[in-house]
Image 1: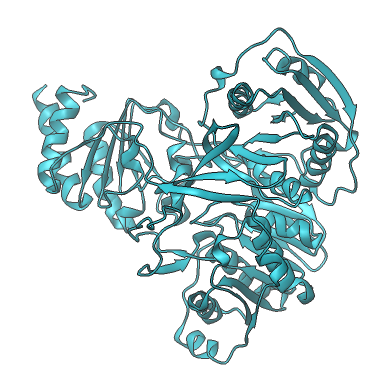
Image 2: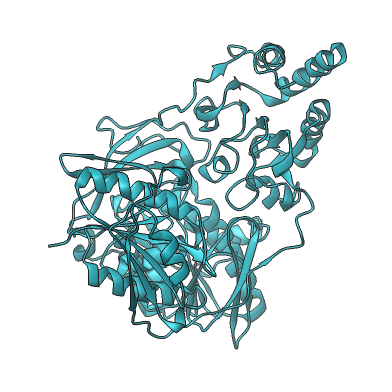
Length: 328
Length: 257
């Protein structure tokens, strides 16, 4: 009889990825509601120090799944390792943080069990001992409640920000069990991770950011946003499509693949607010959105919004701000 | 180098979405459709690899007859031929079932490379490519931002989080999921559009075993996201008046300027 919750702990060279703690927090909430024990799993060639670190959290057990072939992350290696662990534990539920690393191997893991993941969930709730997962669809425009009907295990991933890392409850010291897992042939060879030229612009220190998205329509129109940024004393930033089109350099990109910022004022011009963008800026102090689409997800997190044409609003806003600043 | 590119048709990004009566999906009747963004980049990358190494680019799309517009556009941009996995309700299959149907459709093609976008713009599961690689027994890499392919080896640059990258080398055949922005997408030329009309489009139907297998996950309800903040909407449709009001609010209420 399948029982318990497995939660996958991600790390790079033994350094914890904090999103894993959000998955632990999610697992603890579901564990309490379902009255199921939690087993945290650390995978690596020598992750015993991290396993001890995780044992401080309120989980029943930590498994340190080791194999020399797991020294570097590869999808082949991690899939084999986690398949071994999941088969051994026979859990009801397998939870993972929705990171780039998990996205790379977890669908392959689920497929070994004839399944898909319920991926990128923003929350989960329990009613009558069955779980409902909620995930965003259509680039954040709608929410969908997803339920699992089949045999366990159920595989699900939590989006960064679904829970807070500090929600993960500490415990009395869980037992750590080291096991050696079977890992087959690894077909891909990784090189060392690297950063592209040192980021020229550090937007994380900016007080005010004016960010542009697809709604700006052309590179020439950036001047409009530049003038507003100048009036505000702000840094200029962008959502991914703008940097993909090379209208602004990639070191101006906000979001999961770019920078994460939390300025006191964030002005989003023509940005619809895809999840990948929101995770990079949702902790900003005051958020302003100007967008012609009233359904744009950016309005869900905005303090002030203008539904309308940014080409009309921005020049007026720039002039008004100049007036206010000139007067004070 | 023979490459299969998987392309999905999704609701147009700017389309107003209406939830259906049962609140289980959207009304699709009057929607306009387009190709999922990252799949367009997957095609572009495949065409570039073919220009360098010769071979054939085959586009594969799944869905009702309306997905022919995605196929035609891909052929006009330069794909050599197409496989259409036809069915009216395939959009609701799980990523595992979708990957199973695609595996069935392309297995005998024995491609050297399979490209997909990294995730679709509708469900956004981000899994179909990786599951397909597992079903076909291929090594894979996801979120690929650069492809360095030669006849001897395949080296790909993967995007990690927060501005980090990593190169992976792997044998072919292999499957790659391509990140948006990997290169600039070409437009179809008039010549391409004319040539596309003569290109082969093969229709296949997925086996009943895949389509009828009970789903292990399903959408119970679709709804508008709960707002996490109370947004003050300014201007009441007048963008200029909204801008005047906004400047005042930022000064006197939020006190950020």
